[in-house]
Length: 554
Ligand code: GLY
Image 1: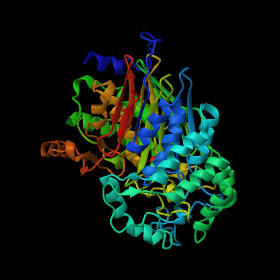
Image 2: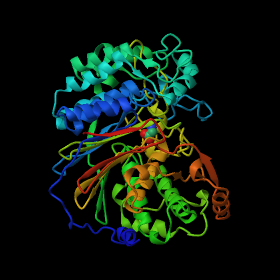
Image 3: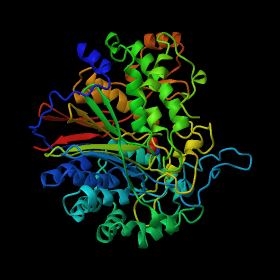
């Protein structure tokens, strides 16, 4: 109990006591698929560092987790190197030069169904391959060809698909046929668990990129295939592809008690929102509240509503919209918002707006966490957006294109696929990056590497990461329990608390309803993959919700 109180009351006091210089790290990988995790471990065992392993894992996921792993999508990387230096790499997709604000609206200003979520017009310019080469150039340590070869071999030899994968592939067959009448790459009448998935076209594409570098994707035959595939109504041009650049950004840092959060800045909302959640929570005496109790669910939901209301107004691509980062990360601002919360009754979302600053899913993403023997740590969340992205396979190249354009606000006040409301900050502009909820995060404890984590789950990513952090550092759970614990989610609008079925009970529903909440039960909220290092012991937490798999180097 005392530990919990001190955590929140000592907010902003950074403790240097306990800083340990003698470490005994063990390499570890936790990712969304066993094949990718095993490849990451092989890279670490063969002398690669965490960055090298992250590149091999990203490429392997493009092969063994085609609904989310990708070379036709984008993502974010947070890493913290052994010297304590942290970096944030933004390889998020961006809008084509021909994109425009109302491109998904009809003549009556109404959103045209599915245009931003399916097919060629939903595709943002992919960033993954540029991100891989950029990360390797700055921080990698072994030959990048070797890192490509793992994925190439996996694609050529194939791998046994899991039950979840078989079900998913069967479920999306009609979409694949509709959006790829001539080129249904994953076509099969009935996929079954343990069927071997071989992808020879994808292997060839990866060889071209391995041999030609970044240009192998953004110029030449692969780029031409992308343009040819989307030619009917897509607007991406060869020039768009050639001009794509990933960007190193300054991570969001938040010091609380003896912890330091390192997370992703805009165009992800993750780092700012996670910081706001922690800051608002620090105004309450959490000691008196039990884990996942009515009071806990109520308090966190009320905090989450306020943070997501701010997200909808203030967050977008900072290169196009001046995100008020400093003001949103101001403790007094968050305290004022937190003190508006009634601890007995829900405030209806319609009565909650963004705060006044002093100036004017299906959810298929994937996350992996890695540390190496030297204490370098990498946290990557990567996505095609929804399951299998736009459902468009690049002709004869064996990979899918994202539907990330839906993460823009197509029309102010109208929800996107995750029910998230956006505004001017996140409206479509040529070459702008769409707002994301991806929250790759690293946490230090007493200035030492402590926790690497993240999650898929669209709008639920931020709350999944938040609750996992609290499980670990406030409720003293081991990492596997912290990751597996049932979760809940509120995102301001719609005004519902989404509760995983495992957490639901009639009495919980009754009490929360009496407090003014609407409850919706649902399946999985997020899939967290985490690695923890404490007292010279490395542990992994691979979420039981999916095919996630964690391993530690022997
Ligand atoms: N595509 C989901 C996200 O970036 O938040």
